[in-house]
Length: 170
Image 1 (cartoon, rainbow, N blue to C red):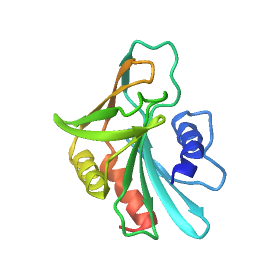
Image 2: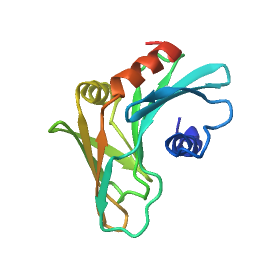
Image 3: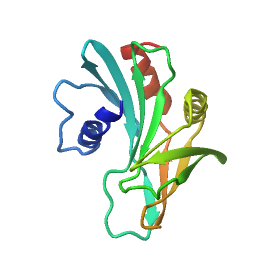
Image 4: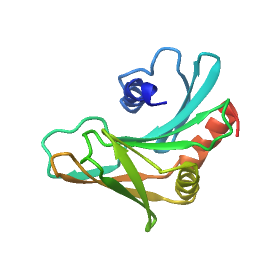
């Protein structure tokens, strides 16, 4: 999955920018309030993902790359959806990020500019909280020591999740 992260970033940004287009071969399942759902085929396996970008970002930085949250589902795997956060910068080595969904905190580990849950149970807990929540706040620290806070709307999450389930299975 990591190998597809960089192309995902461009595909995700293409979805989030009105003038751009999705990656060739990607099927846009729809926009659901603040979330987009997409499917594509990878060597005979259908992959679905849903993506959103922050409604607000704070921090003392001059420049930052793409910032978004993505939930990925592979039709051939019984594993739960995988949640990843792209920070738009390299995280401080060994840093954990804090994700608060309607006040309940979840800690994630980082590598490069991406953060994930520690295990499948963590992903499942995050997805369940995101489906029930209305707002998610993500706090991280860059390799340069810059604190950032990104706020995401969870409006449309459940509808995008349903579209993803229809396209890639439950």
